[in-house]
Image 1 (cartoon, rainbow, N blue to C red):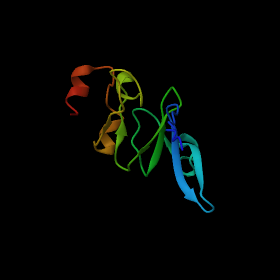
Image 2 (image 1 turned 180 degrees about the horizontal axis):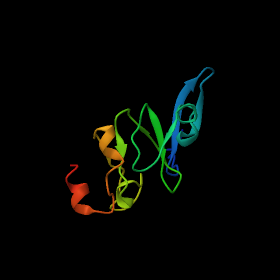
Image 3 (image 1 turned 120 degrees about the vertical axis):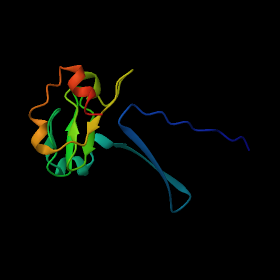
Image 4 (image 1 turned 135 degrees about the vertical axis):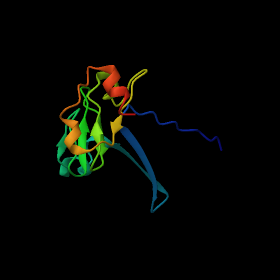
Length: 114
């Protein structure tokens, strides 16, 4: 009996779930994690905005990330893209009262946040 290897490839944001089902069948699900109900039930937060509660951030490409309460998604464009070459999502833990005064275009000021 010849055996075959099955390789699944999915686009970014798609998760593959494989589980065994009765009668020797295999159940394979492609799940769009960006459309998962968790994201639909959370309030949204924007770049440079303090997350009051558990929130979801959506970058310009439509990618989503969960942001914990008390954290702020960077307002720097290269730091608020979830997927990208030489880019990545950066969140800062800074007091709420200081967030609105941050000049995200001033590199020296942003560097002091680290």
